[in-house]
Image (cartoon, rainbow, N blue to C red; front, side):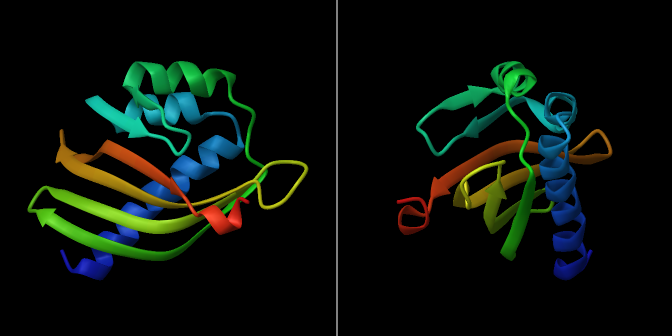
Length: 128
């Protein structure tokens, strides 16, 4: 698969994830897309396994909207790829609510791409 095609395919998964966070179905989406041993490393210093991610998203307020920009692909191996991008998400109220650098590590398992690691880094000047 060409790099651009793979980036488009993985960005579609990222968009589905963000959309699920906007419509409060994130627990279901991430529960199904994450590997059994997958983790999220969040900007506020918490590392969550798949079970903790699902539990927290059941309680999380929805995002109103989001943006993905400056996306790029790193092919780590035949069945492993990383998507790196800038994410901006807004809740009702003050804007922008969150801006950070995101990276998602995907592995091809069971006939599809699964999320093994998601990591956020806050862009300090944007959130000061």
